[in-house]
Image (cartoon, rainbow, N blue to C red; front, side, top):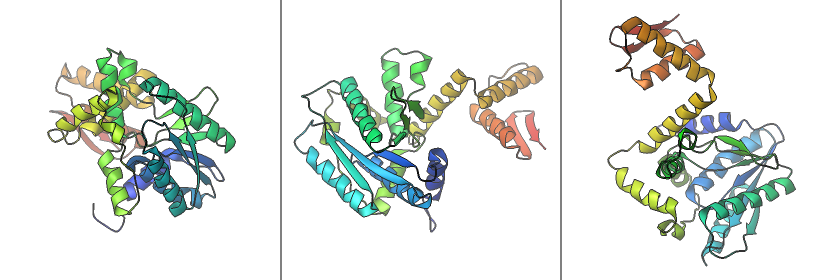
Length: 286
């Protein structure tokens, strides 16, 4: 990553996706791992710019004796960024993944309510999205499951969970943490393959050297399926373009989705130019 601001694109994309309002309080789910540390550090200047407040929320699942070390990392990060930290512990023995997830979100909801925050921001990234999509596939899920995690969802209390990093590859977040010399913790339970997500993560680690952009590709596919399911304008535009190609040429078998999507985005923006769709077919935006 070159230049004076190698993470400018990441910072701008996050700012646009979060769109923090003036004076708003955001709760940032902060495990102490590199991804949530990067998210908190990226959001801190945004909060300062709009006179907002960040609260770093740390939930200790009590799955290992060294969990206090993660809390210490989050407290150190809070001191570095000049933001408040709220840490809570879950009181249970070993639990299944679904129960742990539900209890974690319930704790985050309570922290958000006490902080008068209506949004919780999490650091789920493209790698997490890949795991979620594959787990859904292995469960035999239909199209809804294959859309993966939603960029935004509303909990029963009305609190919004925002996931602005779903399209970001984890290597970018780790590079950000390293470049800014930020502290982070490594979760030893990630090596416990009795948890299904960890087993999928280990299998994916063997594939990534051969498919270096695997996570970005899966995140893009999940987003496309979501757009199609919800009938969003871009999905409708892609469908119209495909129909036009079929009408002009008789088929669309060699029509690249990337070119189709790029053309749809150009139409959205009204950007003048020529867009090659397939042999003998171009879209001209004037």
